[in-house]
Amino acid sequence: MRDQTDSFGGLVVLKGKLSFLKIISALIFMIAALLLFSGCQRDKTADIPPADGYDSDESIAPTDGDDPEANTSPVVGNNMKQEYTFVEYEGYRQNIASFLACGTNGRLDRIYENEKVENIPVPASGKDLTQVLVRPEVTLVSGLSGIILYSHDGEEFQAGKGVKNADVLGLAYFNGKYFACTQNGAILESDDGSTWKNNVKLSNEAIISIAGGKEYIMAITAATDIFISEDGSTWRSENFNVAYDGYYEKYVFSRIIGMNYALTILGYSESDSGNPIIMFSDSGGEVWMFRALSLINDQYPEEFFPLTVYSMGVFGDELMAACSDGRVLAMPDCSKCNQITKVADVELRGIAFSSHKVLVVGDDYEFVFRDAADLQYIKYEDEYLY
Image (tube, rainbow, N blue to C red; front, side, top):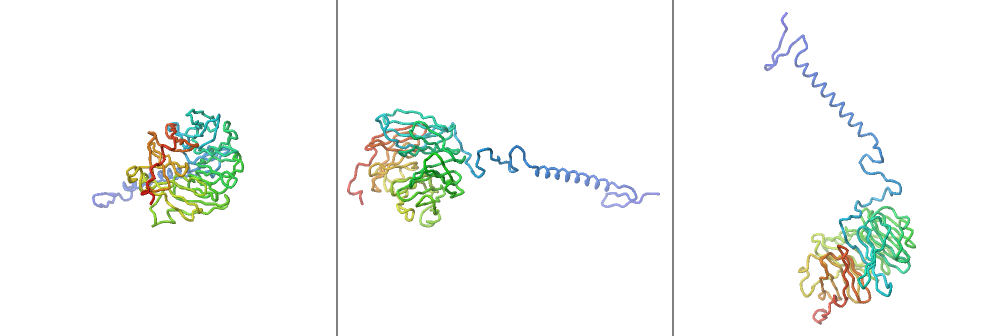
């Protein structure tokens, strides 16, 4: 008997036997099943707990001695970067004024006023060092990867105890205690500089700098968070960009410096990193005032932009700052009397003073001494005082 057939647009389908269409459908079904099975196998593989200390998101699990909540910066010592990052006046050794300068790759140098340099070996494993704090009873040095070093003689340095592995970005002394700020937003404290403990976690952002004054201690983030304490235990905070929104342009903070009763913040305009800001408060942050740069070298300040102010201190009655492009900026008590002097060809990142000399340090481990009188603004004409 002849098979019955139907025609659908030229496709012939057999009836009563296994049709060509059914064969194709079966093949498609089998292929789909195989793909589904393979996908299931991949899904099951994703659920397998990772081995060798790795989490499923491929982050490295803490090892012995690590703080699981440290949230440390990935930045460590970089052998390609050669620079001094900070300098502090130390006092007199061998009847000569001396300074301690720290830098990248674990470098700590004693620089004498006669320009002699002594390298001081420290247990920093080549990590970048960030700040030096010199006190009569102890000298401290901070650095990346949980480094706080201490010394009672300025010669032999030891690692502080109780410091986790977060980058330590700054040091301060206030109210009889030592404080440090970290990349993971925490404040550490110590009674003697050798043993440290957590004071408080203030932020999820890096606390980039900390400074103590006569009545307050403050710490900052680059995003303009300001943390303030009158006793070193209880902290209050505000965000400058938020609190003064509409009154000032947006800023980025870079460092805070203690100067007796006033605490000074350095930074720059968020829209123009070459336009510096210098703001200070002697009221615990209740009121902030700006150090105006109306003129520099009798010219409009924009003539010297881009200008980055990296660090600053007080010599006599004038502020002096280490700046970009090898320049030192002197700022007397007159907004039109500012003087800038080029003393080097590198970025100058630290500044310190002896009784009559100014020392600036910077990139390529370069340092320069100058007589302070050569850098100060001398012309105090009456027309500039008003």
